[in-house]
Amino acid sequence: MAALLVLQRVGVGHQVPAHAVGVDQLEDAAPVVEVDGAVYRYTTNALEQAPVGGGGGGDATSAKQDTIIAKVDAVKAETAAIKAETATIVAKTAQLKFTVTNTVDTNITHVKGGAVSGTGQPGAEWGPT
Image (cartoon, rainbow, N blue to C red; front, side, top):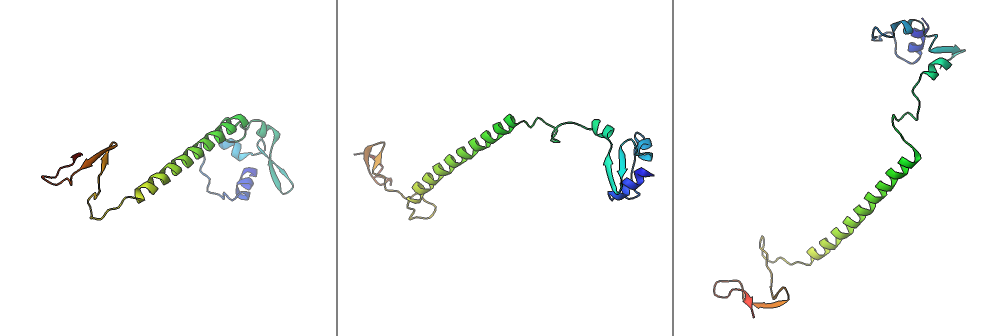
């Protein structure tokens, strides 16, 4: 009966599916829960059987947290560098002029430092000057 009171107090109600293992403990919650006036609390023995640690299920040491923070900071720095490089590319691309739709319309005067002449049309092919 004490277990039912505990379940009702936490809002579970009467519809509690149970497995065969542990049903006896629900019938008598005294080994797990004790009543102190209007307050329900776990017994010392129940707390001794509880999992230990920070509740995260892992090894969340300060050193590991520092490692994670350092890696996050490295990703932030790399992202900032990528953004800066992208801004440089965008600025250079903005300097390109396209006067004919869907056509690269350029005025080529040099290739790899060498001067070229011609229009690219038949009979006036580009070539070194």
